[in-house]
Structures are given as C-alpha cells and as structure tokens.
Image 1 (cartoon, rainbow, N blue to C red):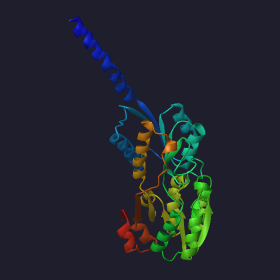
Image 2 (cartoon, rainbow, N blue to C red; image 1 turned 90 degrees about the vertical axis):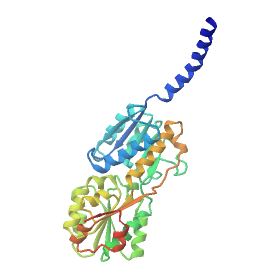
Image 3 (tube, rainbow, N blue to C red; image 1 turned 45 degrees about the vertical axis):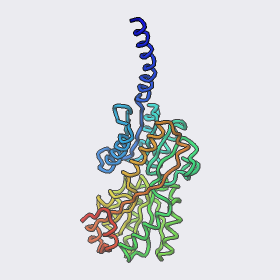
Image 4 (tube, rainbow, N blue to C red; image 1 turned 180 degrees about the horizontal axis):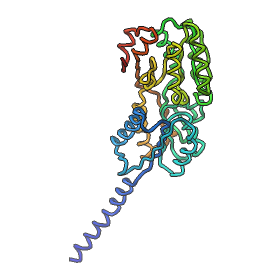
Length: 329
C-alpha cells in the first residue's frame, strides 16, 4: 500500500511541472490598443473587431488569456496622455494606429514592443532603421507607399478629365515626413499628366476653406487629400467645401466617400488590423519586433460616390465603376 502510495506520489510530482507550465502558458497577457477615432465610428469598430478576431483565431481570447485595454480619441490632442496611460499599465505589446500616435508611444517607451498600423513612412519618422530590419522595439504595417500619390492623381484625371491644376492638401505637422513623403511622386505624376501641381499646407478649417475657395474660382481645379490624421478629423469641412466650390477630390479612405466625398482608393484597414494580430501573436510567443520586417499593404479598396459625381457634373467612367468595391448611388 505504501509502495503504491509512493508511486502515486511520484506520478503526481511528475505531473506537477506540466500543470505549472500549462498555467504559465495560459497566464493573462496584456495588450494596449490606441485608435485615434471615435469609438462609435463603424470603420474604427470594424478595425478593432478584425484585430480581435485575428487574435482569437491564433488562440488569444480577451478575458481568458489576454486583457485588451483600448483607448479611443478623435484626433491627436490626447495622444500623449493616452500613450503614457497605456505604457504605465506595462502591457506585453502595444498596437498603435497612425504616425502621431506611434510617435507618442515611442516617446514613452523604448522597451515595450509596439506594432503599428496606418503609418506611411516609419523610416522617415524614426520608428525603424529599415523596413526589412526594424532594429528597435517597433515594427508593423505601413498603409501607403510613396508612389501611391501618382495613382490618386491618375484616378482624379480619369473621373474628372477636365482638371488642369490639382492641390495636394495636408497638415505639415501630422503628415508623413511633413508632407515630403508623397510630394515627389505627386509632382512627377503631375508633369506626366500635364497638370499643374499645387502644394497646399493647412493647419485649420480656415486654411482648408482658403485652399478650396481658390481652387473653385476657375474651372479645372482638383484636390488630393493626403493620408494624414488631421485630414481625417477635419473631413466634414473638406467634403462640404469641395462640394460648395465644385472641386472634385480623391481621398485615401472609404469613409470620406461614405460621408459625401467623390472617390477613394487606399488600403483595406480591416485587413491591416487583422494582419497586425499575427505580429502581436508572434511577439507574445517570444519574437522580437526587431526581427519582424515592416510589411506593406496587400489589399486595396476603391469607393466612388455617384451622387456626388452627378452634383459635380461628372460622369463616372465604366472602368471605375467596374473596379470599385463600393459604389454609393
């Protein structure tokens, strides 16, 4: 009897380390997420849902083995406050959206792993040493390559063939590289398409109004809105003033078109967030951000607002209608 008890004790002792390892592997991890949008915006909610679904498919469930602390804010005014707040929680990984938000996190920590999305120029912004070898505690998924500006201008001339001068509008305080990231491609495409390029730096609604009023004074004005968090936050006056001044405009993200903009072409945001979950998973399992190359977008979405086109006196080409993922009547 004693021998059997001794053997049973040995079996229990052998099983104990396995149980401990299982408990350790299932210990609660912590993620910090900062999305600089309003929590009730459908696109933003969809992005977060794509991220959490991606994590769930990889074995991470909020409330079971991971705790996800999410912060929302419209714009960048609270970026530093929320970045510090999330870093103080000492998460295992941080998911950061946009260049200004990632910069805010970088100021707060050089050790906690950060995975970014919707950053156009991580090298120029000082987040990584290079796309193949990030080197530090930051890596992620860029939303646009610099050459995308030529695609936006090409689409604008297709849907509004009468444009003769086109402004690229951005806030130099928040745009990638202060705006310089996209400008060479934009100016090169303008020369090729025989369009006058206009560099439009704005920092307020009043300056946005001045640009669009100037473009609308004579026929042939067009607008490209640079991917820029400031532009997203101020999209309502941009869309309104473009319509009021009869200026056709191209944007990066679909929700501009949903809100009345003419045409958009850019990355599938939900796909970027879903792919980001794979990097978060790898880091939680021991990978280092420095060893995870920055990735480019692979899925793009085009949207066109036919009602807006008609109001501008434009006919949407069949090529755009056939290529568009979303056609708003």
